[in-house]
Image (tube, rainbow, N blue to C red; front, side):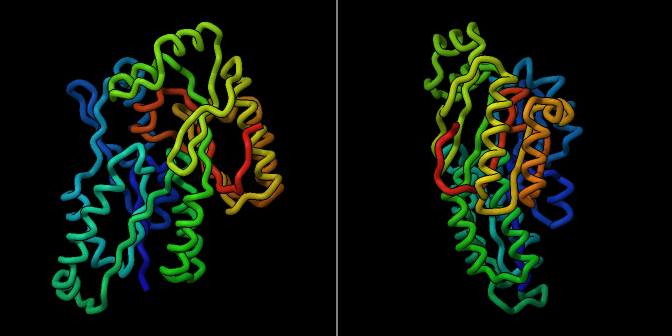
Length: 313
């Protein structure tokens, strides 16, 4: 059986990995002023756009995910012929309409695929499963990496589906933002009043950086640390301890809102990589997606992994 895997472009995995394993991308467009950039996870394009636009006007940007019709067309024009069963793995539905769009599109796809497959010489059924990762950014990468691993190992759709749904409940994403004012302004632009001007001003004045955690679609602070570098060190050291305690998959994903060499020079990075090497955990690192940087600002660091329940510390 030919099993396909689809992710949206906020999934922070290296584009080389996605291409190597034929993981399809649902792009997201970003409009800043009169400029429109479609994010296909090209790191050079993302960094160029970052330098010219995001730092100045990103807080007021508009992100435009694939519509129901665009997802339907992608499947009917290509994927229902190329594959027999497709897993569409999306960013958390609590922060984006992509899961809902893909779910709505699936009804039309499953109603309309038969003559298209038949014309291509495929008379077997086509199946599609939309999976909500319940997470963001680099933490989204845990599920598609596991799907690729299971597919490569010859597992069928039932086994893959059950594994992905289990991991979605146990995947953790941790993020340290660099600029609280940016997050506050971005939140206000989207109508989210959860980050007040006072808290942003106080945090900036005292150089307090929150460590944010996303799990099961819910996001909130789990620590507040003075200084960006100390906060990143605390995050990396914590991640290393989780790796040493044992993860649910041999995978850890990192992303950074800027040049990767900057992240690699941060305190705690080398120790985290060493812990992963010792435990046989594969590390994936990439520039944060354009959509991610629009939403949390430049210079943010994010770590994702699957683990049993735990507390930050």
